Each structure stands twice: as C-alpha cells, then as structure tokens.
Image (cartoon, rainbow, N blue to C red; front, side):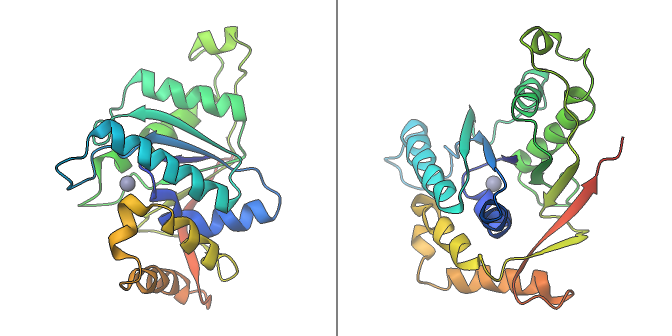
Length: 224
Ligand SMILES: [Zn+2]
C-alpha cells in the first residue's frame, strides 16, 4: 500500500520500485490523500476541475505501473490535518487491504518539506502502529469485521537517512512513462531536460551501491 500526499509523488519517489514489484506479481494499492487541487497558476482553473484532471492522470499513471486500485480520500490540497478522522480512514484501509509493506514519505525530513508530506507520513505511521494493530482502537471497525492487522515493513521516500536502495534499471522507462501521464504537473517540462533530471536523481541514489539507477528509502522492519 502506497500512501501518497499528492498525484505524481509516488511516480517521482517510488514508481520504479512499484513497477518492479507488480512485475514480480505483488499487489499494489495507491491511497491518494489529496487530489492536488491547488497546484495551478492558471487563473481560469478551479480546484474542482483540477482535481478531476489530476485524478484521471493519476489513474493512468497507476495503470502503467500495474497498480491494482487507486483510492482517493479527497482531502484538500495543503489542508491535511493530523486528526482522528484522517487516521481512522487509513486504519480502515490498512485493515481492509492488509498490506505487508506500506510506502509513504519520510516525516522526519528537516527544513523545507511540504506540510502535506509531513502530515501524510506522520498519520500513516500512527495508523500502522498502534491503531491498525490493536483491536480496541476504532471499535466501529471491529464491529464491521475489520480485524487488527500488523504491517511488516515500511519504506519511506525522501529520507535523509536512506538504508535501502532498489535497483530500477529495468523499470526506469516505465517510471518515466507513468510520470509523463501527469501532464497538468510535468507537461511544461517534458522534453526540456525533465527525463535527465529524474535520471540524475536515480543515478545519484544508486551510486553508493554500484547500481546504475535506483530509488532510495529508509526501511523500517516492524518486529513487534
Ligand atoms: Zn507532493
């Protein structure tokens, strides 16, 4: 399960890893916390129209990477809050889909970090432990038959302390194709050094491990 603040965050941060895992037969589900409805300079654009466009782009990108399902929570872009309701939505999804691995942003990145990234990841980690795990939290979920679930691993992207490097040499092209679906965000940069920028990031991520192209994560193994 990939818990994502905005459309295109997953493709930029873990698209190559997602493509690799789905090719290996692993099921991947996206959870979009916002639909990126504020990121436009166009004076004619409205949040509603932008959300519709971005959800369509995200669906297409996810399809290319082999993602099985995309869930949209539709919180306002820039407006995520650490609330029991938001946490409960994530607990519900974790108990429903029962993922072994959850991926999200690293909440502990210092200095400039989009508030939605920080809040998405903080709330996701809280949802995993202890709320999805322990039966007495969110009793209404138990009443619906959604039993506690233990996530085994967490992969955090954007980390300043990466400890896992996934080789994306074979899936880099798919990552780029998926990323290119986000026309309303990356459209102006396509063909203008955008691929070079993404390739450079992947090259840098793999350097210390002797990998030509990689995505870097801080991996937590949950052994409770
Ligand atoms: Zn974002």
